Image (cartoon, rainbow, N blue to C red; front, side, top):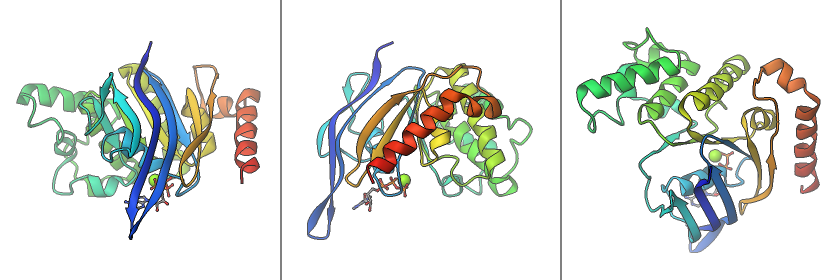
Length: 255
Ligand SMILES: Nc1ncnc2c1ncn2[C@@H]1O[C@H](COP(=O)(O)OP(=O)(O)OP(=O)(O)O)[C@@H](O)[C@H]1O
Ligand SMILES: [Mg+2]
């Protein structure tokens, strides 16, 4: 399958006082359908900025960003975001169901909307909690509501910014496995930002290492692990440990 997203020589400068700050530099990235691309890098290296540029929330200063061969100037239909801070994107006065329908309720018939919401809630395993308010849910459940909202739009591409960073280890690994299943069920491409190297290897078909500022992709590593993943066995495989060592070394060498 060909590339559906393509970034060519993308750079970003943002005004800072009377000057400009170089945030991203010469980024090349291609995204194919149904694949998961993880991006790892230290705090402040430019990961969120890169995701914002991909999704058309910030415009690149130079280079090109295209989605389905169209230049990206604003968030394209078919592309959905999942932000790190789920608490601030869920509306506390809306139930789970009404939070999930937020992006589609004005665009679809009530019947179609209700079906999409029901399916998205089932995909993140929150069936039965439709009438809860966000503050009646655990953190992991709230993050699943945000993911369901993105899924209800039936996106071709999910742009996820450290979506599991604030969660405890058990919730996090559970959601990682759910995300792999979601990709298999929906065929969506996923760009997933993390600073957790093991998470990047476990989820990714390709891991991009980012360094900055200014943010640059210093290496792209194709991950070839058995597809029937399992938290304990996959993470103990010699190939998994070799990827982990390679990435740690690559980061250490460039410090
Ligand atoms: N609007 C802005 N104006 C000026 N500088 C900015 C702006 N937004 C981000 N930056 C700078 O861009 C750099 C990259 O920020 P970004 O949020 O992309 O990093 P990040 O890799 O996502 O970090 P973290 O892991 O902490 O979330 C930082 O030096 C930041 O100060
Ligand atoms: Mg960030």
